[in-house]
Length: 200
Image (cartoon, rainbow, N blue to C red; front, side, top):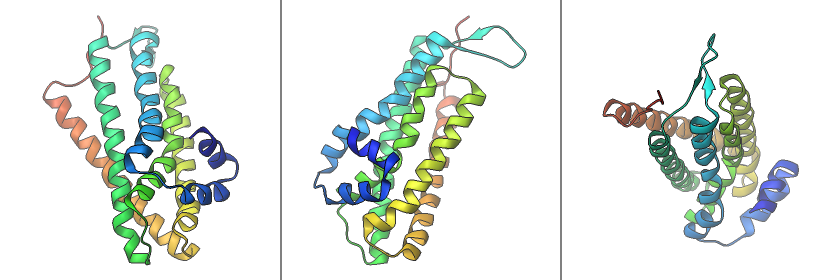
């Protein structure tokens, strides 16, 4: 896993070909990649919100969440990330037939998991929850994930760059829909009491 992650940052085209040739099940992909990487933002944010804390604009007071509140929110975020990767893998698998590609569901989930790797790694910033720093790192990670999607999908699916651009744009649209759905679910959960509880 670590070698692939490093390769996606240094020589993505070559690494996508290497990842494509690997044979693995959905369970193996999750256990060796998604389960570990998705834990990074969940754990880091838990410690950042309970131990480090953050300051509101114009105030020197440090705000923190209670351990129980942070733990429940971290767990829900973790489950959302695991689900999101699978949904994206399924969507890629479904759309691939339009481009005369017939990858396995395992390959599609693998592609989705490695495409989101920069976003997972950006979760390290959760240890120090500064709004501006999180926005900067988050934007950088989202840009790199988008780059991996647009450059990697044609290589991974063995299709032309033109087809890859349209395919990637469709995947990106579905990713945004999934994100909005997760945000909507978050709002519902907060409305029924599963939200942040601050320490006094």
